[in-house]
Image (tube, rainbow, N blue to C red):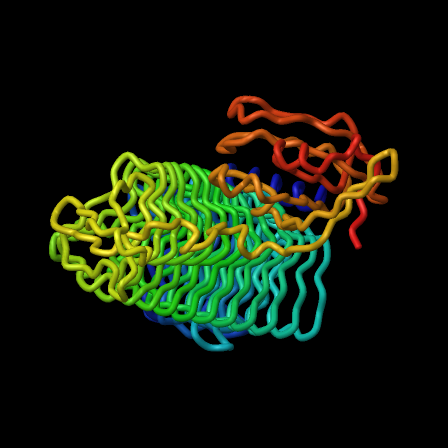
Length: 618
């Protein structure tokens, strides 16, 4: 690094002493290699290439500093300083549909993009210093030859080296730090523990079976990881993919990509999926992204499960998707949990928990199913909003959802047609909802349960004798009398594992409990949140971590007191805390633990134990 810094300093001093200042250099054919266009010598042959050298180029709103297109003569761009390339669609140095070029010892400063190479072949890049606000280097094209360049790690983006890999097979790249990483036309490659900070991130193009694991990607201005025209790429266990303006992970024209167990934090989009099929996003933590996951371009068979979306503006947006599934995830404090636009069809939103969102599900899609979700403390739990003739949501099903403590449970706009609505639980609401469309309530003879319903059931068939009416003209003709007829809807916790736990007190007395196992991040975050106390009092949750720690607890959005019991790796008791449903209080254990058992206070008293000494998990 000291040698590179010295080289850069020498270049800067040399340019400051001898470089001539001029405007952009534009070469659009072989005939444009002229002195007027910055050529100082050469004839365009391999032995005597055209030389463009020694210029200081100051841009005044032009998109490109040095632009070379449609040439096949040999040329060299050397020792130039380009400043002020501020057009986000431009670049300081741009080469397109050209070959046989060398770009070396140049400096780019005060610019958005550094060097962009498009649809070109047989180029050499070395010793370029790129100080940029967006992209330092990007190579694009559609053919293998368009990526087959000699790009040295003596090029730097914002002070860190460029790592350009082409044609690798079966290799593992470990623990490197870079300003740019490209993996192109490669197969069975593993990038492990790499770090890209304030640079171009990782660009994977035309490759198969590439794994990015344990990477740290922070403050990369555009996209942290781009997957382009590739198959079966896996991004996993990356704790921090953060602070990228466009996206943490962008998947474009690719198939079979997986993003799992990673932190997508404060990006424009956490994961962006465009015109790509069979993409899976699971077990991730999304925090304060503009949109947690954005799916567009008629992407097919997208699946997201077991994710936590916390304080993202929108958790998931299905802009244009076919056959997408969003399941078993937790959404907390989002403006919108799941947003579905009119170009989306055959979607399924199921077994999620949404707490404290403005809208839980906001849909204009068609032929979708919204089922077995727990949506609590929303302004409107499920809304098919007004589309003003721009979309016509048709043939959807809304069934078996718990809509709890929300201001309004359902809203159907004037364009909605043929929505089937049945076996939902409307519980402790301010307003049931409105139906301004033409939808089917209780299509199979069973409607919904309403906590405020006062009608009678004279014939004892479980169906209320008085219909429930909704503003705008909706009518549920068959309201359910018994809440238990629908069953207990647990949202994201419905997919948690169930096992037996045995508590042993100091006198040797034992109590056997069936517990829900919260061993994934979104489950531990959720706990008892948003569960009606009528159901929560019958549940016990066992929290499990990967390693011991002093993990903190809160009681926000929890509606009954809990007994918290903590245990170490061997199951020995490590402390207990009585927790009240106080949304402001944080509970901090004194000792490290790896298991935590949350037991409703009433249930704990019924066990009759004289304290607790041991947890046994048969």
